[in-house]
Length: 165
Image (cartoon, rainbow, N blue to C red):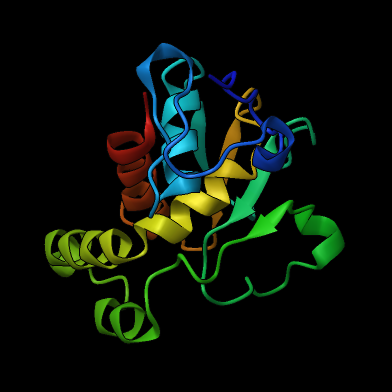
């Protein structure tokens, strides 16, 4: 039996392969190795996720800063953004983003459609999360002006509902 990896520890360093038994009753899955390990680790370590508008958030670099927009935010340099990751492949599709157009009347339908997109990318999201040090706070950054109706809200909810222990 292998020990469960620590957050941020490379999977290869603990010798995991599909079907291995892990402590705490976790088992890696042949199709979802990263996702399974991540879920197992999160039974012990819970993610702390915050969302902030990139134009207004300048907190210390001790957190993991992830831009979750498909497009780079206007007027922000890469140095100013101080990003650790840019998850543009997890952001809403161009088609969905253009359809929504930040029209709050479409918010409920946008949430549903974006959640469907995220469901189809669940393995990719699991792989991305497996790379993170889950002892640190994860900050999802977005550029939209509306703090109550943006994709970061939907993504945070999706992560908490699908990847918390």
